[in-house]
Every structure is written in C-alpha cells, then in structure tokens.
Length: 616
Image 1 (spheres, rainbow, N blue to C red):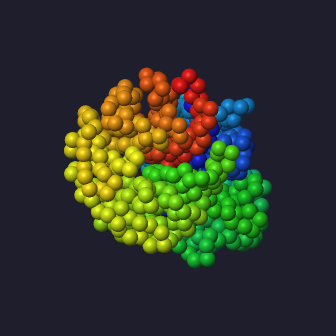
Image 2 (cartoon, helix red, strand yellow; image 1 turned 120 degrees about the horizontal axis):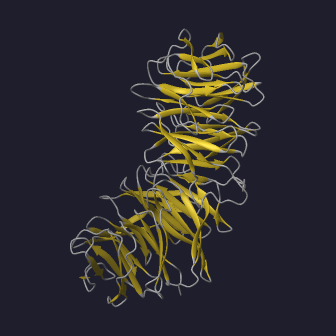
Image 3 (cartoon, rainbow, N blue to C red; image 1 turned 135 degrees about the horizontal axis):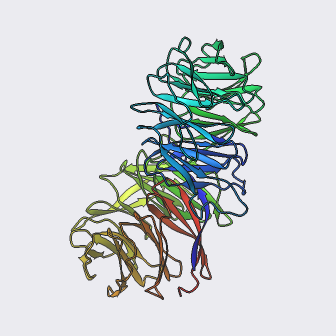
C-alpha cells in the first residue's frame, strides 16, 4: 500500500533575453541545473545516467532565477526574484532516491532586495558571491554556512549580470553589469581593486576566469570579447564583432586551451586561448531566428550545451547537434495511446513520449510545427480510431494521423472545453452547447445542440451523454441524438468540475471545485459521498481498467486513489507536484500493482509505482 516515485521528466528552462537563464554544470556527477518557475531542476547530461537521476527542488516561495553547483558537486546555491539565496544538499549517496524527498537546506539568506542574477562559489566550497538587482547594493559576498560577510561588492552603478571567482589562490573575482563595467576584486576578504569601463560599449552579459587562472574573459551585447589577465585584471586585448549578434555567455574547456561563446546570431563559437581566433563555429538551424538565439552555454566533458530562447537544449558533439525539446509551461492535456503518451501545454505545444518498460523515453518528439501546432492552451487530446484529435484556446480542432502528422483543422465557433469520441463522431463541449463532428481527411459538423445551462465536463454512459449543470450543480442526461435532456441525479453543494464514467458503465464520479466526490450508480442512485480527501478543485481523474479504483489529482497537488470495494480507504500522496496536478494516467495496472503518470502545472511529468494491496 504505497505510492513511490520512479522518474521525473523535467520541463525545459524558460528564457527571457533581458534576464537570461544560466545553465549550471556539475563536472563531478555529469549534471546540469537551471531555474524554472519556483523550482530548480537538476538533470543528467546523459539521459541514461542512472546514477544521477533528474530531480526537482521546490522550497523557494518566489520564482527562481539562477542555480550554481559548488565545485565539489555536493551543494547548490540557488537564488530567486526576492533576492533570497538557499544552499542545499545535492550529493548522490548510494541508492538514495532524490525524488522521494526534498534535499536538505543547509542555509538560506536574504542577500538583495531584487532578483539574483548570478552566483559563484570559490574553490574551497566555502565562500559565495551572489549578484543581481537591488536598491542599496548589487552584490554580496558571504560564507555559505554562517552568512558572514567576506568583503564587499562595490564599483557598479547598475544591475550586475554575472560574477565569477578564480579557481586558484590567490583568489580573484570579477563582476559585470548593465553599466558597461567590469569590476575586479582581490581577496578574500574580497575588496574592490579596479573598475574597467574603457572597452565594452553596451551591457556586459558574461564573465569567466579560465580554469588555470591565466585569463579572464568578458562578453556583451556589443558583440565584443574582452580578454584580461586573470591575476591582475589588466587588459590584454579585445575581439570586435566576434559574433553577428549580442553575446550572452562564455564557458571554458577544462584544460584552458579553448573557450566557447554563444550569441543571438544562433551560433556557438569555439576560440583558441593561444591565438584568440575561432577554431570552430556551431550553428542552430540554417536561418537566424529569434527562437534559436542562444542565451547560455556550458562546456562539459563530452559536449558543449547551449540554451535557446525557445527553451531548447542543444548538445554539440563530434560535429553533430542534438536538440532536446520539451514543455516550458504548464501541462494541460494528456493521452495514453498504445505505446506512447501525448501531452499538450498551456503554450500550445504538443509532445509524444514513447513508453519503454513502464517508463517514458527521456527525449520527447515534438508534434507539429509553428504553422500546425496550437497557438494557445491545449484543452484536450483524444484518440478517434486511426486519428488523434486536439482542441485549444486558439478555438481550433485539429486532426492528426496515428504517427502524429497533421492532417487538417477547423475553426470553432467559440472556446472549447472537452473532447469525447463515440459512435464515429467527435463530441466537443462548449460553454453552453455540444457539437458533434465527423473527422478524417476532412472535418464536418454533424449535430449542434444547445444546453440548458453552462457545463464544465461531459462523459458517455452507454449511449447517453452526461453533462455537468453549473447552474443547478448536478448532472444532466442527454439522449443519443442530443435532443432530450433529463435530470435524475442528486444535486451537490459545490460547483461540478469533472465527470468520469467507469469503464464498465456501473459508476459515475462527479468531482467538484472543493475537492469532494459524489459517486453514483448507473441508475443515478448515490453510492457514496465519503470521497472528500482533496482540499481544492479537482482537475482530472481516471478509472482503472477494472473500474475498481479512481486515480485523481487537482490544485492541492496531491495524488489520491479511491477504492470502490473499500469506500472508506484512500491511498494518497500530498505535494506530488509543486503547483498542482493537471492530468493523471494509468500507464500499467495488473494484480493491484500499477505505474501511474502525473503531469503538473509546474511543467513536469512524474511516474509513480503504486501498490494497491489491501484496497480490494
């Protein structure tokens, strides 16, 4: 009798060019980390790295902005929009499953009064400099455990965008910002040494010491690369027009022989540290597009990884580019279809995940492109014989073939709410009407029926259609031809949110906005009103194939599994997702053992192993 986490499929980072997301790299365990929503996501560079599974840190109460691994790989320091920095344990010990519980917070400090933009650790894993936006100051240097000040970050008159600490003694530090200045510090304790304002002509985006400490590189929106002495901060040379667009990031190879830069020109360039000339140019796409502008880059042991504005992670290895795509926003729709799962997000994107041994393939396949995907919130996805049908808030119904290739679409009269397939027709629910369509190589309207009240959900029981009645808080029944409406179901107190009919047509589950269920028998008599463990709006539910269990989730973020055989018992797991569970699916179910899938408003997908022994 348990629910245990198996796997996390994290969302892609969200990027804004004016406040670019930085990718953090852990060379010890081969991982990257980035901010997304109110979380920090850590994922292995190699998707098959079972020793470093992906996990999510959720203990920030404000939107996160940046994360940085300590040199040992044992800790992460993460910052948020409120100016708070948290230091937490991210070490991998034995068979520890990081999905099972949240990492332990070692310390947390209020550093600035505005967003943290960049964080850097010293080589001793003991001192941290955090910089960003503030009123009284733009950066602070402190010890990670006590928070004691170890110097002052001075010399800037505007937001600091990046910071780096030299990896060898004597330590040096450098910061760059919107005031076009690079400030050099000596220490510890770190103190102002010089401010260099003569070379960059626009905002400076990134700064990085070479691993051997010999050089210091700064890059900016002026397309300049400026090289300094890593020991003294003295200017050595600058490279003008290094890219055809603003430069957002710089990262060194671990042997200090080369460094890589990324730019808004969709390119990563690799430079020699001896000649400061380009030795390799790596491009994303044949044409320069805003979506492919590169805002962050890290050089790893096996590859170079860049981050595009659209959230794609690009892996460059052996002259080839592999792009990993995924959700960047709340997941709002899902469908288990044969050996795959299709998901849709609030930004209109659709992805297909193959199911392999009760797990999903780590790399999702995008469905559609800029011209065929939904332009907005994906509301629902269903299977209609040999077709896949989707609806969205762009008021369109789209038809795809079994291989998820676009076939056709139709403009809807208003915003859709739900899809169903029955008797060769696709049924679409609108605010106060229901329309049947015939779908295939073309889409034709078959029947249009007006409802007596606004509705939130529909489902079929035998040949009849059940709809929620939001005026009277009950279920209405429509005949097969959508003509006659009857109401034999008992009304409820809360506002109905979902309706789910069991596979054997024996039970009807009606969930409401307060988290309570009322279960009816097929004859509309009440079976139970005791399923009331959820505390907020129910967003989705699925019956098991044998109609014995109801898997459900909602805004309270918990997973709940109710049993028809033992009404009073519920298997639950609170806080399964940070900001709410949007969709649930049974991936497998046999002999009271199951694998379930949940999607979150945090953009993540999670798999869980469920043991229902004792609930029958």
